[in-house]
Image 1: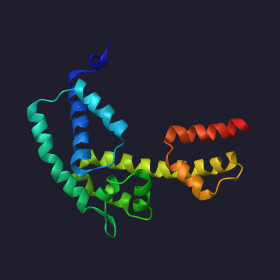
Image 2 (image 1 turned 90 degrees about the horizontal axis):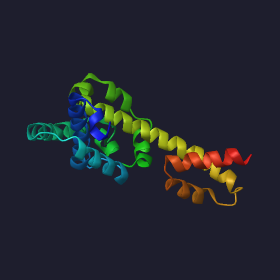
Image 3 (image 1 turned 45 degrees about the horizontal axis):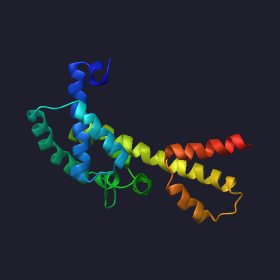
Image 4 (image 1 turned 120 degrees about the horizontal axis):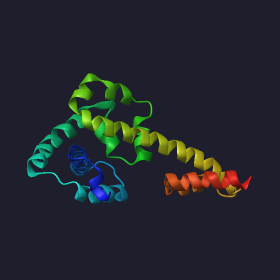
Amino acid sequence: MSGGNQFKNHEKDFLARQVHKQLQYVEKAHMFMTTKKKHYLQQLQQFFMLDEEDICRINAEIPKKIEKLRKLQIKNDVSLLDVCASSPGKAYYFIKNSKVWTVLDSENSEKGFRDLNYTVRGYINKCFMKKFFMDFGLNYIMLLTYGRLPVLCCEKLIEYLDYEDLMNLCEAYANKN
């Protein structure tokens, strides 16, 4: 089987709607997404086309859901939209010591944007993972450089590494011993 032929029609329709929604959320709400991920979704969207009626219906729903994100406050002056529009490193500090899970679990949140809820949860988990890997990687970069680089310099280096690079760093140190 090749390309999109491995999916049944209802699966193609579902996937097409989800990809279109994700790209619309990112564009309309200025939500954070790496260029690489956006490019992959745009490529995927070419394989699974939506009819004009679906596009119009989805596009009409998006602003309401974005407004819902804007109104859901997780702590003083920080909304879920603020979190989603920030890079994972910055967003972590928004969600730290907040009521983000309470807000996401609330009935209000669930009814307001059920499909977006999973996206927001995934992004929040990514924020926690990024913070964990940055902290974890920082320890390894300090060990690999034998403490010759100042901590601030190592922190700056870590900011430019993606998850795969961070894992390779940790693996390099583990294999060194």
